[in-house]
Image (tube, rainbow, N blue to C red; front, side, top):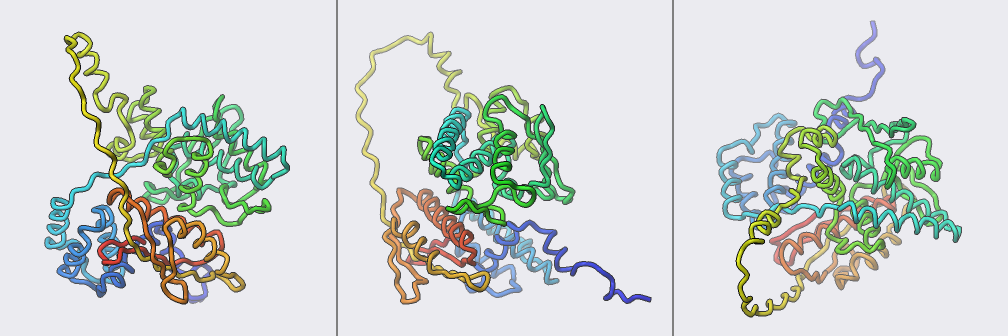
Length: 433
């Protein structure tokens, strides 16, 4: 008789890890570090400790962030066999009180309109031709990749992590109709059964054509569809990191002449398509089925009504109103100048494998990411920096801080380095990681 230890198979830990999305694992690990290291909490925790933790960061972290921290704490206690303190009445009432005393408007990504998509595609096509004429195959490859990612993200309403997890062997071309994309895991796929998406072939700004041209130019036969391209035109083996897609998208929009490119994010593609489809007669049910939303509330968060402010209806009624002489209107007050906020960045780079150096990545980070904020190292090891960040308000500060953290992770990933980074104000009241 063969013992159970001799049976072939993978370790149980591999399957436990596969049961949870990578993004969720990373965010939960970061949440636990914040609870233990930034606040000094102990695990297992009591309901009183969790409530005090929420109160300590109620004014600095958003409600959604606090809920995510609670989810991480709840999962840790369940996995370790402890009672879940986040379900206690004290914790739930504390969270409701925070929502009442610290209301915050939900920030939504700026939707990418079809006119802007057309502008970017026109610029990309011209830039690809210029690169080929100059023999710059590396730049031509990057531009083809960016065009495929942009169009596929828009016309299929893909999330950023869904785009970067697409694999060549999971794409199937259907001549004259389009292409199917199979994703083994998606955010809404709770049963882990995988989802097949159909991408239509279009006469203009076609995601299928752009994706096929990118795969052919890069000579890809398997592995991640979207991956890094170095300055010599060599392709990386790993997929793009989700946090690298936002700065890449903003860079392309800026070069194409799109106004306020820094207000767009990965969700801009999804919101842009949802708004376009709604304005062109798609009902909510058809849109939910196409994009993959499971409930109508998720879908409505992405759809902007064609006459969102009621302007057209009101203007139609005003057409018959009597016209009076217009009074003198005072000039609007001047826009407030940005405030300089001193922040401290804690940064540590570690090679993921032997032979990798952190020096080049450190230099790039200091030059590209920190110098615009007058970054100055405040310790000999160059692991702590003092920054002077300009911001008009708290939302602006959150955006700048989050973009900075995203850029740091992107540079570290491009150099095959492990990064631990956190940003906080000098008083220790606000924290980003």
